[in-house]
Image (cartoon, rainbow over all chains, first blue to last red; front, side, top):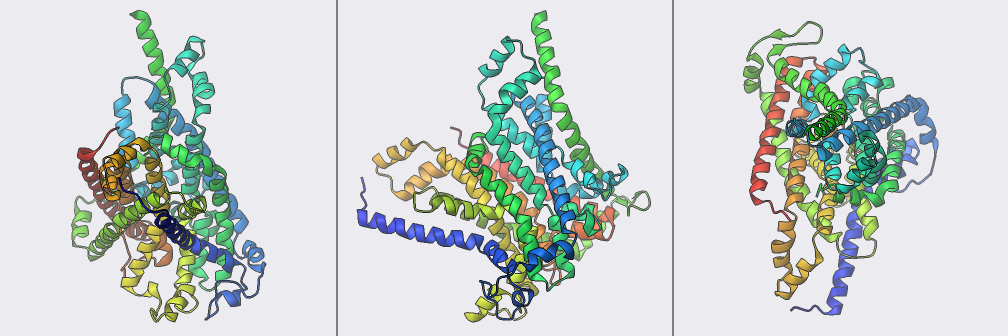
Length: 278
Length: 296
């Protein structure tokens, strides 16, 4: 058996701590910088000798962004888009995942293979007919048109199936003997047990759609109908120098995501560990 | 017997009720568009007039098209560099963040935060940080004599390096969490047994940790490779494929040709190329890891 001296172990822990704190700082540096830049007056943000900390602190960027672009409209669009997709997709993914995990029926294997294949299809590769389809449904250039194709998600179905597989069989059998119907068993017995998985998948759905650039960019040809990432990207393309303003917009766009993550952070690793996505 | 059959029938009916909405939506919005992409790739189509069948013309054009070859090459270079670097860093970070030290929770969060935030939004920040005139990172690089004169994003070599770095930065935290979940599920006594057998740190890593992480490694490799092949956001915002198309990848090209130029037929052919690449890659990885998989 090898032994390490306490002094050496202590030095190792100190070195590890310092190194990891440095890495953590480096990882959030672009975000910290964005926040600080949002408080700089425009002249200072576009200064030829930039500094990390603002020399003068100002809130004008946060006030101006609302009128510089239809920011409230973009915010609303993004909340409606990401929020509805999250709720609807959680519902359909959970139901489908439950069916694939807890029932035996003819066609189950075929359905599961279909889900796995669809999981591998990048949405970028089908975006042209998707655009076409949404337009022919009369939903072109609308937030509803953005939402509808996202209301079920192959990864979500797979993720929930993994979670439901891990639950003990006797739970539903007991309920079945008590005379509960299948819907009741699902909503009253099984679903309450899935909270960590639901929160984790909810974060994935919310985050993916809140952040998505390509689909909202394709679906909106004017800035009014866009989501925050698309709107800010369009704005950044046209107004190259107003960085203080852009950073204020960016920071406001990041807040809901960070809050969501901090809220569910505790259950997050549990959610991943217990779905067998491990 | 009859009772058994009715129970089984009732179960099957219930199962399909649960499955149907999700499966129908996925079929309509994923499977059907996939078939449609395949069909459109054999047509000339610009949304204004109905698709016109042109046979293999798009594919013949695609093979001879320097822009496709350029986008393909850029995509492969991006994936070949970013995928292994991201996985290796994620694994190293997961191991370091599995050890006990002061501030571990904060560092875990800090590493994960880039995955949560919008890549398009922070790419604006990266563009600014690397700006030749006002960029703080450019300013700092200047200070140590590494000045990129026209800014990192204006030169082909450094522009690619910059979007790659952002790709790694964005995803490393997510894969770190996956590895972390795996590390936490390895039974402690395996390490104690290895310790008793006199295994060194390196031996423990190669005989206990790595084999028991093989499930995560497979999943992370497949997901990371697929994500690399689909790179779009930071390129769209930071360089829009430039300078001189040096960062244009397949998805960026699909967006430009298909959506901006309304060449749906040709854009679909490029999409099919991307899709084939991803399917081939996922299969190859699945079979490679499938042989080495450890179940426990």
